[in-house]
Length: 131
Image (cartoon, rainbow, N blue to C red):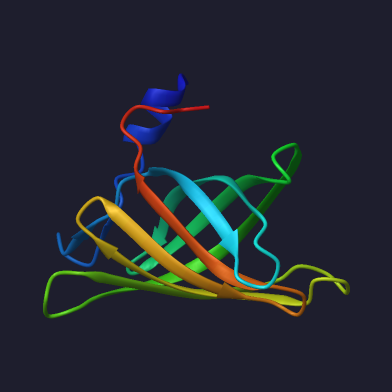
């Protein structure tokens, strides 16, 4: 399958047509502890109602790549925004990474924390990016 065909096989809609989350997001992260920041991408795949498997990829110091997967729970709020929450154990050194995000239209804003770090990331809908 080509990338675009693969993405169309997994529409990101929770519940019964409630929150439509784009599959690909692109943006940046920033540590509030040390000011480090870098690019970040996320690919969402719905695993069941209101639950997504998400693959995050980014770079530390602009050159050192990182990637991890986590499961996020999605809930649609009365105002139409979507709240995403989840956590993932990233090993002994980093401990458990937890995040909470709000999706408003084409923008995803999140806070994260782990044993060694805390900060934010902001991402936007990434139309047609498949790399």
